[in-house]
Image (cartoon, rainbow, N blue to C red; front, side, top):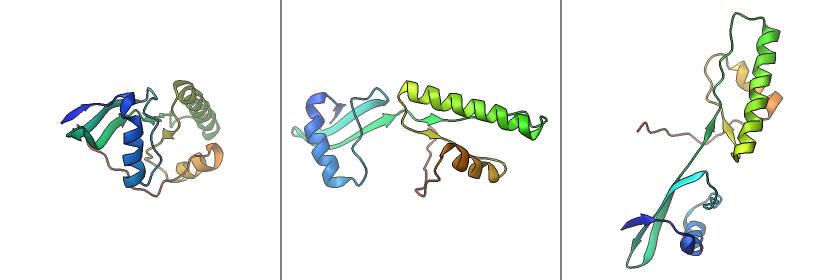
Length: 125
């Protein structure tokens, strides 16, 4: 049976997570976690799942502008994105890169973006 998660499930879900997952337990009371569900049978929780909102940075800059101006515009957009992400409660901001690979290195060096080794899987729904 699938049902909605309640705070009364927290201890049992945390225990299940610690026994079966190798990543940090999500903060299920955070409003960024949506659609929290439990699968249970005979009043025993067999699994849980949730959807977490993720912040993706999308930036477009006029390529006809001089390099210095493009860098200034990018800087303003990223700094504003970081500020607003923090204000909304997001703990990270994703950037899926297209174009020159040097831009990724700039994001790492200048803003602290980190390249993840884990593959990202996407399902279009």
